[in-house]
Length: 75
Image (cartoon, rainbow, N blue to C red):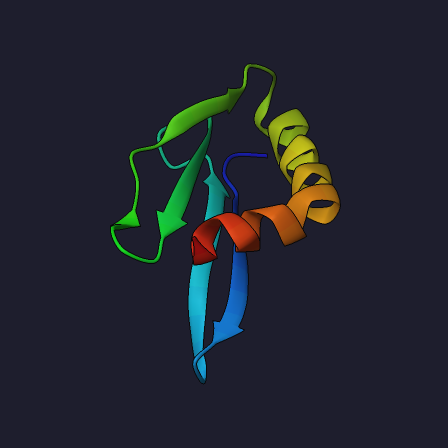
């Protein structure tokens, strides 16, 4: 694997909103939170393993915590 991007979206107010982005845009596993008021936040490193390991970890994180991620965006 050389790169990936995973995006959690939610439909709010008849629009699709970006809630969370996991990617490897800078060659490592990072995550961007998005907020309703301030938009895209600075990236944080989320996994120190390979890109494949980081992508799989991100998928599991999104599957298990997406309701809380969306709730956090809404606040």
